Length: 327
Ligand SMILES: O=C(O)CCC(=O)C(=O)O
Ligand SMILES: [Fe+2]
Image 1 (cartoon, rainbow, N blue to C red):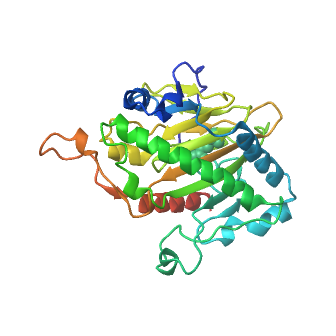
Image 2 (tube, rainbow, N blue to C red):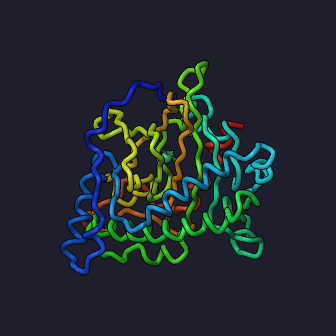
């Protein structure tokens, strides 16, 4: 358990302007990659602006979360994630415990991922965490609305992977073979206000590192996300209109031989009396893509610090672990 101590004000999570990264000018793209390189070695977190996602789509996605969670419980339970072999669907409060030893997370969720039906080879082979989504009938057009958002997350995710490659002196298309069928999960989240009688160390989301490559977080205007920087200090990651919060997951540690950080973060529920909504999207190369230390980071004959690992296997293990804890 990581016992809560208050976070300092944010002074070191940079806002990176992606506009020059869409330029034809290779030097302009490289300059953005260098900004990512610097922050990846410290907080592992940064905001992005001028990412090309329409503000209206961002607003609509938070509205989708608001509409879904305001439905009666019995309606939400029609897509109960406990009835899904791959934990897709509605997640009741307390279903997940991100920080072992802390109380279960005080948040309500709705999870989707790659929508694979029973004819897909992965599903036939019983590969963990692969299967169909559960789509609710209400709110209207939920599936279409969520999929329109995911399309844009794929575009941003691919773009960030190219910049991540560049930031490690790799060719921009280095990850392309792993990105034909990216693995992703996306979750709507609702964090209620912190109860007066909250248990000791009760968090909205317990301190954790993300498991995959890149997380693209959309948050509303309430705040509550906190990040541990390389100095071990907790700093706030407050909402900044028009931005996404990007953070690097455990796969990046393997890729960068520990040079880049997959930093701890958590959500403290608020005292404003209002619900907070957020939408993290976890973007990764395909299930069996092997992540290994970037060749640019190894001297001749040197051994990488971390063994190569497949994205899907690691993430599936972490799902089992964090849901098992809450059971
Ligand atoms: O809701 C947030 O701000 C962060 C959520 C998060 O860290 C996660 O789901 O991994
Ligand atoms: Fe996270």
